[in-house]
Image (cartoon, rainbow, N blue to C red; front, side):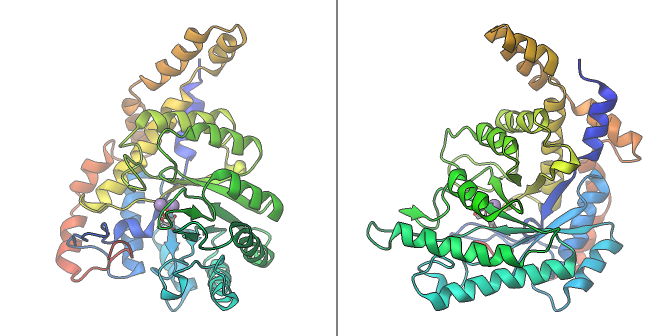
Length: 388
Ligand code: LRH
Ligand code: MN
Ligand code: MN
């Protein structure tokens, strides 16, 4: 049976990174529903992230998106984060919201456009130097809409060249996380559509390049936990962009659409050493809260990751190995299901109370008065950058 003290230690040691854009207004391409009290600046996004950390105790890192979080002085932003018990996490590049990127960014047929895109990525590394961030998260919207539109292999060559230049610029303690997505905004080919493409590029680049798995970026039915297990085995799992999907890249709260899938993913992570800090798997959220209140939704999401992790840690791995070895299919499956069907909420409440936190973070936030305060004080909040 799992040792409860070790389970508790692993749970209180887990760190979940929240995205700055999850605190801002967002929507679909049909409508952005503005909410009152949303942050007007990257500094205010950090104020909200500090609330999430204050009530959960496990969310000290915040990912930034450039240019959505552009500021004059990034060191000052990092200092502001530090004053609130936070750290700046992954720097996400943006090579998809400029008119010049109509035919792609780093894969664009025109070298001038590629130069502009690579310069932006290099600027993101400069920002990392100023903020102390160790992760550069790259997602390329590059692709084509029509057969024949561009040469698939040429585009891979351009991608490899751009990645090599950015990789060469990384410091010793910095890494590049390459995200994949099977479609959208391109509808025919996407230049980094799947983990295999990302993995192949990362392998060529070297040990500072790793794959990031955005859970919303797969075709329905994809076995994401297999990908996770494979990448961990190869030392190439850099981290997650957690969210949930019913249809496409829905960016709903992690663990809301398919909590069982999240458990299966976290089981592979836990079993294969992915929770050990030295493995350096980043547990990041990449979500938008279009219709629900944002800060409590981020808190809920952090709790969903914790619940899936707790269940994964409760898997009796010895009993599982024994059943697997003896070819007892039903017993092996039962071991996993027993852990999944455990109500871990009392355990998590206990851990919170032991560390001086309120047992129910959502209720504690609701009673804190923060939402009322920002609603009164902040007028004219900004958009996350999505769904104008
Ligand atoms: C693209 C994506 C990528 C972006 C983020 C805002 O769909 O998942 O990670 O940076 O959304
Ligand atoms: Mn993502
Ligand atoms: Mn996405």
